[in-house]
Amino acid sequence: MSDPSHFTVRVYYEDTDFSGNVYHAAYLHFFERARTEFLRERGVHHSELVKDGIAFAVRSMTIDFKAAAHIDDLLEVSTQVASMTPARLNLVQSIARDGVEITRAEVQVVAIKTSGGVARMPRDLAELFKP
Image (cartoon, rainbow, N blue to C red; front, side):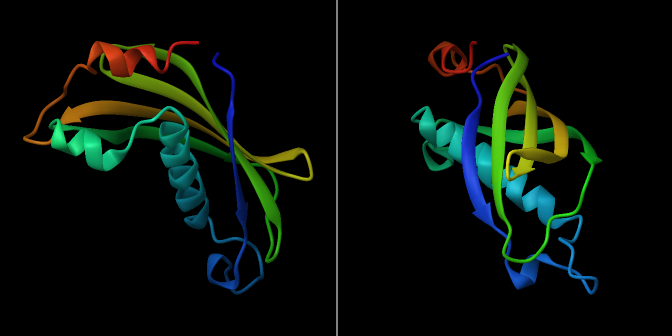
């Protein structure tokens, strides 16, 4: 597995449900932001990929909710490459509070052509994700 990328997010009122816990769908936003920052750290920007006719799409995601996050929590979201193929990244993402993992996701992201269909990642792009 590659070295993890880290992104910090604060839980706001809008992220919570009636019980005061983070609403389950909000975790998807946290994971998405962290994947975007993971790309940015490697010099990859969605706007530039689109100009080249490439985009990334989530193909599948499995989430394990271990404990709830709450308003004002400061969360650390990590992203790392578990494995890859020329068209696919298998990522492990986790959310921790005070160093304790509270949510974990296994995410499969595929490269697609903006015109439709699966794409192979350009070689220089794929090199950025190798462990």
